[in-house]
Length: 403
Image 1 (cartoon, rainbow, N blue to C red):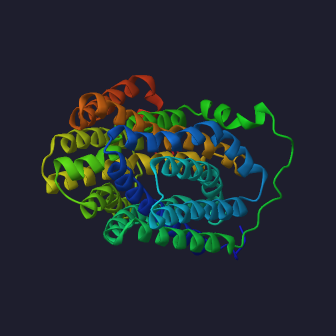
Image 2 (image 1 turned 135 degrees about the vertical axis):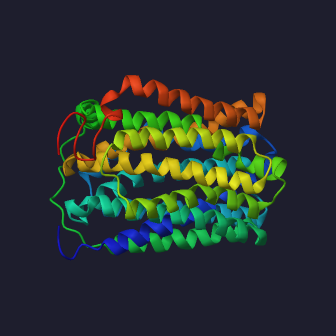
């Protein structure tokens, strides 16, 4: 790593792009529900972002290992800013429609698919290996801060109209792109060998050989997919909790607030022993909190449940991310990160679609309850299926081995 490596620019780029995206999520969710009054339409937003991630994420990981990661991230941020600008123009001009929103969401999904593995793969090149877990904690904290501030800011600005939210998001994406492009980093010239099926799928092959990592990624996949209550937040905000866009912003921010508090706790009390047990406990808390939120008719209780949900999820995120980054060589980080994103990023969008479909058939409350119960079932199954992960002693020491 060069002494000129610029982690602060990376950090700022993360914050700005996450703020922009979270603001978009609030605006798009509220606007599409206003236009259609349909739970299925909310789920469709997740589906149209899921499809490009599912189809292109492995290609994106291979691309990140073969090309300039910094340039990939910068261009992808500009593309997302362009989609926000289209939504702003459509809302301002009165020609916005659900089809336009779906099309923009699809392009956003493509850009985020190529940005994510490149962005994640840059981090180990900007810090020393010994400080990587701490850097991951800082980046996670930045993401959580953005997830708190973004929805709250988006909900507040939405009071002035959707074009205002989309316009601010556009500006944030442009600033984020400039920040990332200004990063100075030295990296060995990436290989430009032709892409083959073997090289594209190398990330999957590598993760299959790491049972701990595979179990951690797979458990998060099913937990996020089944517990996708965030797709129902516009329904809960308007029809169950009887609040407006500002209340929706608070609901979207609450999980990140809980995660941010847990991040501060882990900074003082880092996970050193029995990290496997800690991960299973975190996902269990996630499932229980989902059930509490599902049954709540109080805004205050709902916010507390979502904060607890976010705190439980943060534990599994830190453990999984650390395992992926620490046990992967640089020349494969793009592809391994892509597999990680394929499991988790796509499960988020697929979970929104699944939850929206169940809510259409059975109602929002039963859909959320089913998600929480399903998460608890997954935890019980994973104890038997992945004992290596359950008994993992530390981030650097597998089960049954001494540090």
